[in-house]
Image (cartoon, rainbow, N blue to C red; front, top):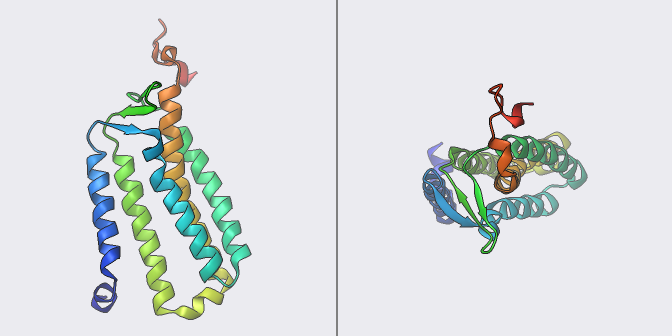
Length: 179
């Protein structure tokens, strides 16, 4: 274990530090541009696709896992986050005002952990890049991480665009979102 940690390049620890810092900042209410909101998901998707197409010998199996799980997780995260309260879109500046969201920290650190574990496995067992089962797992886990990040971003925008009446409580005490 200490060999793995000591042979990890410094830039990996810098990325972890930046993700942790960003995740903790997201625990507080903040104002964020829509463009900045999508940086992390797009970087995760790009990094995953690059790794899948350049490192894995069975790229079709890896890509199938990536796309399949990625789409499912994106939809699930989107549907969960879009119901969040407190997200407001300033249309003039395309800025999102959002309350603190622990999901951002969880997705960031979880995504880093998955990518790190996969990288360690490839570095310690290079023969795995030719194994169909491993490439499918690699693609599936990459899709899980990328899908969670993308679903989190799209869900926040959807929540901010939700009409104001969706929070109206009718006299029967139920939310429109529950109907």
